[in-house]
Image 1 (cartoon, one colour):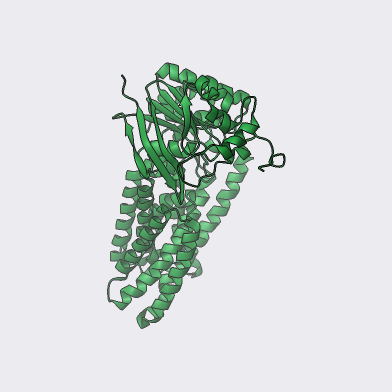
Image 2: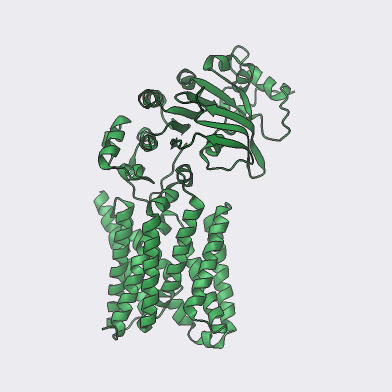
Length: 263
Length: 263
């Protein structure tokens, strides 16, 4: 069954959606939508470095994404404004990545695969990488859930309860780095942030608790993956962007539904 | 002699380049209500945050009774609208509490009806009471309140202080609170500490309200506003740093800037 490229694509997308739902909820709550961009753009640099040094691409992107996460968390702990830091890092990292890629001839040819992903070319090994990453992220979130939620609500409140808000932030950005590295193959660097933010934003108007928002976001992400792949198959559109298109349509539906329920 | 719940000796706290607290020592004994009083910018919240372990003091030490349970009510808590959170869920951050327990506590603080309402939809008074309920759920021996009645109207404020007093009587918890409001505080405290970057004076409300330092700081009594400015210009604070001593200006008790001639 895993021989069918469509099944593999669907499984890859579902694994990703499972992680991006809860994680994206934190991204929305903490207003760090740019983090996905910053890390994803940095991972293009990872692609270039990996290709230049003959290392596996997944390893290169993971290493650079983790380095980016630690940098961001470190700067935030020192009191830098998160949105500015992320804005600077996101665009610098993309520029550095694209410049670096131009020095690596073999990367130039399939750069679009890294920018937009190639979910239909997911291999069994990729599937292992994606589901392993997703399981790791979910385990991290499950373990730290209440602590991370308290730190998200108020760092003072968390610190007064004996938690270390800097550590909770670090756990979150590390989980994000892993997710971005995993997602590069599926939706590509330019659309990872969309998978983090759009499902969670769509879920917001329909739920009353943080846990419900995380679960519904995962569900919406999964629906977007399945719907996007069908769309891609029937209209012969690129798979990654099709997934995000469906997610965006669900967002519009959910937003109108939420608005109607309010009235 | 009973062991104090918390004791600070020679506390110096620096925020950025500015030394906000200089050589502050205080202790809180079991069961007493201590109020830290001071104008805006005098370091009241900073002191509380240092005592809670949110800020690290540059010098000096804080000793807590071993195993001390502290309940903290922050000055203000902004909850992002993207975070769906009912009052009941909020009360279980970070320690989880059962349904019966949270409902009993909401009833205790006088807002049994808000359990399933979103936090962002509560009125100022309800919100403060839910914050207090959360602090009380940890069964604190020491309650720390940072201007808990900010944003409440006069009757709301009086009711809130009555509630604090009841809680103290029921549970025997000591209360350390911060305020810049003179009148209610004076009647509700066992001991008052007058703060302006350093401890100006301390004692029972009656002693403090007759102390020249206190009158100077708040510009009360027959000489009123005049004393405030005499304090600012004549009284020599010898601790040799540059924090502002003229914040009485914006406190509303002194004369307006236009009327006042420093020469």
